Image (cartoon, rainbow, N blue to C red; front, top):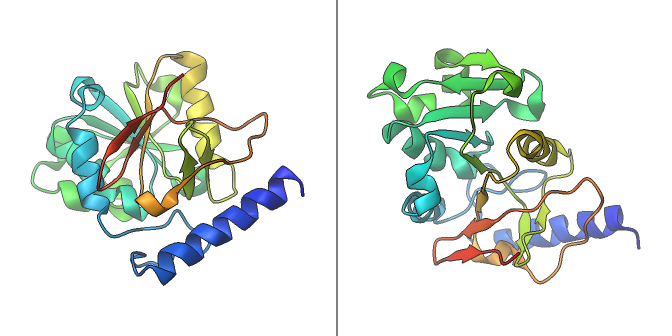
Amino acid sequence: MGAVEEKQKLREYIWKKLTEAGVARFPPPYGRIPNFEGAEIAAERLSRLEEWRRAKVVLANPDSPQRKVRELALKQGKVLIMASPKLKHGYLLIEPARVKGKEREASSIKGAFRYGRSISLAEAERIDLVVTGCVAVAKNGARLGKGGGYGDREIAEVRRRWEDVPVATTLHELQILERIPEEKHDQRVSIIATPRRVIRVQE
């Protein structure tokens, strides 16, 4: 079995596992970065880390399970750059001062389009932390997205400019696998936050 087929089998395994365990939240996980019970706790756990506290500019994915991450970034005065779905409209930059009291709305896709402005990453002066959505991760940092390659593109674009930027993800414990097959273009995460713990990937 090739890497592409193996990855798809792993995605289907995770989506089914989350559903059967009763921890998948709306929208249904299949074909998506799955939303999960405890997403807010995982986001809070991430927000207590030094890498988060130091970050002034956070680049985040637009998926449901990371909504609390985006909201916390804005509430804590961080500039939020959100990738638009499938990168169809590039990236949206949201200034925290502009959305005071409306952080929850601004952290949604619809709200980001309403309150943000479109930019390219080349226009960003600096990105201090990347938060990416994953269907699954391995303890070595290998990540599995939903198959479109957009998360890898986002991370790779940031790392071309700033090699040392930490890349974090929030997910459920059931989304952690022993091994994920990797291809040349695949990117790894350095921080994994779940509702239970934080795993720092050892280089």
